[in-house]
Length: 110
Image 1 (cartoon, rainbow, N blue to C red):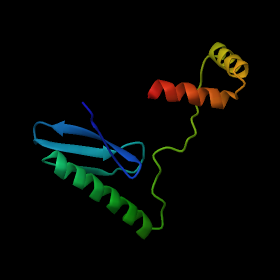
Image 2 (image 1 turned 135 degrees about the horizontal axis):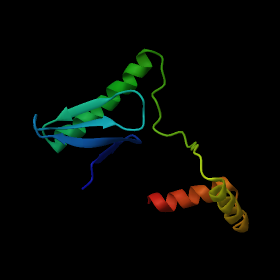
Image 3 (image 1 turned 60 degrees about the vertical axis):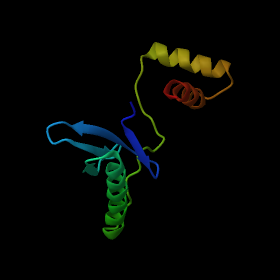
Image 4 (image 1 turned 45 degrees about the vertical axis):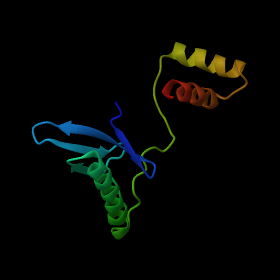
């Protein structure tokens, strides 16, 4: 089951509320809260597009750039031994640690 909709490079996680019997979603990976809901998948997709377009227009009206879902910068901590092994592996493959890690993450997330 796919619980994600995409539009203009943004993704929204889709859920179902059984009590209200509606589908609802929220644009993922941004701090601004942009939500939407509808009774059918077709109407939900239209509501997502409308909510996104309204978000972009509102940002423009207040002189703010819409938040981007991902910057491409990933900062995380690993154990020193993991860091050492990854750096050696990258060097052995003739790549920077960033290049090597990007390839590994890309394969793992495909």
